[in-house]
Length: 230
Image (cartoon, rainbow, N blue to C red; front, side, top):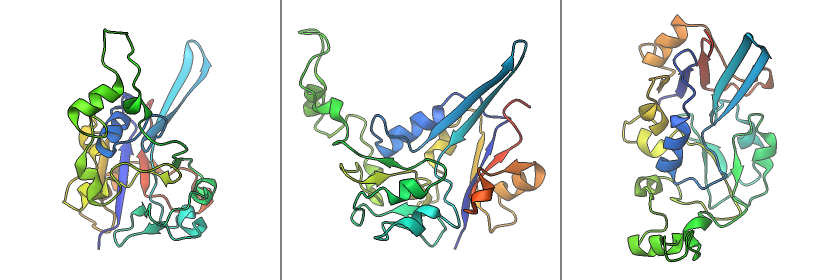
């Protein structure tokens, strides 16, 4: 089987957050929940200022701390090395969140997509309410992507965790994760780390690269190439 990973070229990344927006749409992710996020930092004093931008997502670690910590087996590794989540086994204990050193697992503390249940109009007699739009369209949320439900709950319920799956529903069909396809700068590359001829391995051989928090021993499979400022 494959051993999937992702390389993010920070030299190509423009910090537009298109990856985060695309992820929200593809995976029906609620407000306040982030499968794809970022960290940024500005250091120095003008004119010697440095800005850093690091896209963040589940690292699908080989030695995943969340899998080890989960008491029910809800977090698990599949045959392709992806770190996945079974909502039917999840009890919402947040052990995985506490164990993950990268902070990329979210908890659904409320019933998701509250806006589309709201009956209040933003402008009285001027705009429709979220609930009215939802009822007219006949779907739970107007931008619902039914493809997500092929391998995971289309919308995750209150009381459980959720996180990036590398778009396993797309990978199963031979497609790239949607954040990879949606990046306007082609900064992301997805592929099989066990295939010496894969594009991701060619990039890792060509450029200096790093993973986040390597001292944690989780062996992340998201690699960052070069730097955002050089």
